[in-house]
Length: 241
View 1 (tube, rainbow, N blue to C red):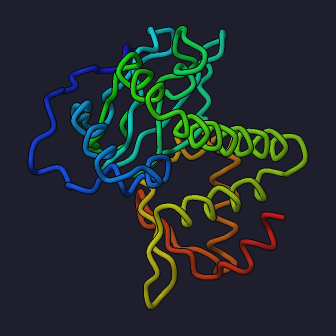
View 2 (tube, rainbow, N blue to C red):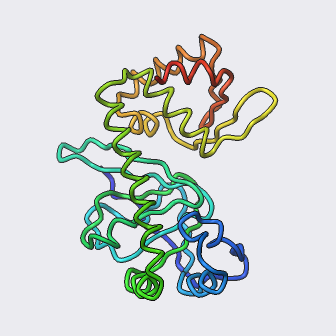
């Protein structure tokens, strides 16, 4: 497998980054304005283009990342070379937070799905900030618990759901986080290739494509390249159960 491209650019935060970006992140929304400003001053901005990696499985976990704009995919490569897409993350979500409480090598590879802007915060700087404001640790643990809950749900889906059910659930999850309501339905610019969507569902590309074709035939969705239009959300919800 070809090594991922790692041409990322890091620089101090400039005025073009939204002033209230830290306040818009659920993890930090409870902080006072002064604390948000101090935390923001500790961060740097990183840009990655589609296909570029932010970090690779096995790399030292020395910092936390926050997505400002764009999407990142978090994947894992099995010993036999097969790739599994663990999650697709968007604005306001975190990457690399596990190493804050359990320092060590990265457990997955983070790759940009499209042009993505992130804020990075070094481990030592954040831990020093938390020591002065211990209440923040509670919010971080709550965020980790939510991530663990999603992981457990994904594992349960692999065991108990068939592929069409998992595809329907994946489309609904992507719609909830990235979708926009239109006159025709919910437009979801997921930016994933067919192979990436199959990795996210945990099935072969052929099987996932067959499920998508069935949904199109039933009039539930319309495929639009690296986007999908959900025409019948209720039917998809019933199929996802």
